[in-house]
Amino acid sequence: MSIETPEPSSLLEIRGLAKAFPNVRALRGVDLDVRAGQILALIGENGAGKSTLLRILSGDYRPDAGVLSLDGAPLTLAGPRDSRLTGIRVIYQEPEIVPGVDVAENIWIGELPRRGPFVDRRRLEARVRHDLAEYGFQAVLPMKAMGHELSPAQRQLVEILRALKSNVRVLALDEPTSSLTDEEVGRLFALIRRLRDRGVAIIYVSHRIREILQLADRVAVLRDGALVAVRPARDLTEREIVRLMVGRELQEMLRRHPAAEDRVVLSVEHVSSNWHRDISFEIRAGEVVGFAGLVGAGRTELAKVIFGELPFDTGDVSIGGHRMTLRRPGDAIRAGMGLAPEDRKREGLILVRSVVENASLAILRRLSRFRFVRRQLERRVVGEFVRRLNIRTPSLDQEVGKLSGGNQQKVVLARWLAAKPKLLILDEPTRGIDVGAKAEIYRLIDELANEGIAIMLISSELPEILGLSDRIIVMQSGRITGELPGAGATEEQVLGLAMADNLSTLVRAASVQEEAQR
Ligand SMILES: Nc1ncnc2c1ncn2[C@@H]1O[C@H](COP(=O)(O)OP(=O)(O)O)[C@@H](O)[C@H]1O
Ligand SMILES: [Mg+2]
Image 1 (cartoon, rainbow, N blue to C red):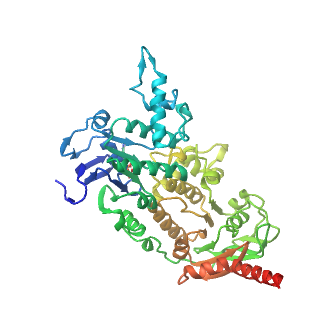
Image 2: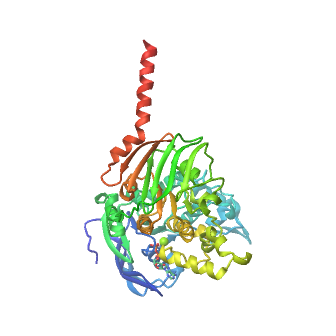
Image 3: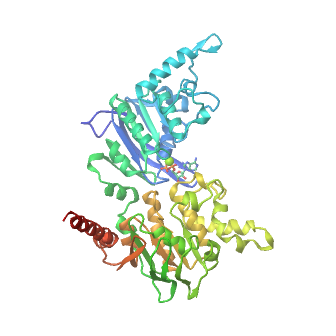
C-alpha cells in the first residue's frame, strides 16, 4: 500500500529494506516508492548507502530484511538475471564492456542476430543504426568503435542502449555524470527525460545538488543508511538539500575557534614579481588568513612564489623570522611550508600511486634513514592520518585516482600534515568536492589552526573565506587592494575590493573615450 496516492501510482515499492556489512549498517529500514514516468533522485553523501540500494535492486546484494514489489506483485531477486527479467536495470559508473568487439556487438551482446554460425552484421548494423539515430547518438557513439576505445560516457550509453532494447521498466543510474563533460551530461539528461516521458521509472543517484534540482521530479535523501526525506523537487532548495544531506547548516559547518598567537610565522615584505606588485603581509601562528579575489588576481601565483615554485624579483619572504632563499619547493618544504595546490590532479597527486605512497611523499626524507624508506613506519604514520582525516579508502594501497575528489584532497592534506608544517597554503581546498567532505575539511582547518599552524587560505567561495578567516586579504591584478577583519566582513565589502580597480579602469576608459569624442 502506498502512502502517497494522488500522484502516479508507484511501480516499484521498497519497504523496510536493510543491509549491514561487517562494520556498518549501510541501509536501516528504507521505505521508498518509485513511480512510472517520474525521475526520482536519490541523493546523499559518500557512504550514505545509495549504491548499496542499487546493488540490491540489481540482484547483486541480498538484503538482510525488507520486501520489494513491482506492480503490486512481490519481487524476489536471487541474482542479476532475475532483476533483468523483471525489467529493472542498474547502470553503474563503469559498465562492463567487451573490449575486443565493437559498439554494435556490445549493445546486442547475448542476442546477436545470426546467419548460420556467424553474426549477421548487416541486420545488426541496421538495428544499431536505427537505435543510435532514434536517440541522436550517431555522432557520440560510433557503431564500429571497439569496446576498449570507449570513454566512460560512451560505455554508459552502450549500457543504456542495452537496457532500452530489453523493455526496461525501472532504470537506475549510479552517479552517471561523475566522469562526463558538460555536453555529455546535457545529452544524458535529454535521454533520461525522454525515457521518463515514455513511462520508465528512473532512479537517479547523485551527490550533486544542482544537477538533481534540474532533473528530478522527486528527491529522496539518504543519510547514514536512513531515508531522511522524500519531497517533490520543486519544494526543495539547494540549501535545504545540503541541510538534509549533512544534517546541519553550512553556517554551523563553518564555525571557527580563533587561535591566533602573536608569533609571526610568515612574513612577506614588498614582494614584486612577474605577477605581483609590492605585496606585503604577515600570517601569525594559529591564524587563518583568507585570500579573496577574482580569477586572475594573482593568488595562486602568490602561493607559488612563497613556495619557491615561481621566482620573484624584489622583496623578502621570511619564515619564523628567517629570511628565505627560495629557489625551489624543496627549500620551502625544509623551512616548514606545505602547499595543497589548486589543481590537485595535475600538481598534487600521483593518481596511479597508492594512498600510502602519495601521503608519505613529503616525509620521505625523514623516514628514509639508511637510504631506504622505512615501510613500517611509513604505513603507521600514514595510517594515523587516514583515520584522523576520515579518508574513506578500502586500504592504504588503493590507487589515489580511484578515490572520490574529497578523499583525494584529504590525501594531499595528510601528506602535509605528516610533515608537520609551520605554514600551510591551501589553494581552493574544497573545489569540486561534495558537501560532507567540505564540512570535514573546514573542521580540519579549524583544528590545524588550533595546533598553531599558520594557514594561507585561497578560495573563490566567499562563504568559505568569510566563515573561516581571522583576516581577509583581497587581491586584484597582482596587488593587495585591501584587508578586512574576518569577523563581520560582508560579501559586498570583499567584492568591492576585489573589483575596485576594474571599476576605476572602466571609469577611466569611459572618460578617455569621452575625451576623444570631444
Ligand atoms: N561490499 C561492501 N563491503 C563492506 N562495506 C560496504 C560494501 N559496500 C558498501 N559498504 C559500506 O556501506 C556503506 C554505504 O556504502 P554505499 O552504498 O557505497 O554508499 P554511497 O553509494 O551512498 O556512497 C559505506 O559505509 C560503505 O563503506
Ligand atoms: Mg555510491
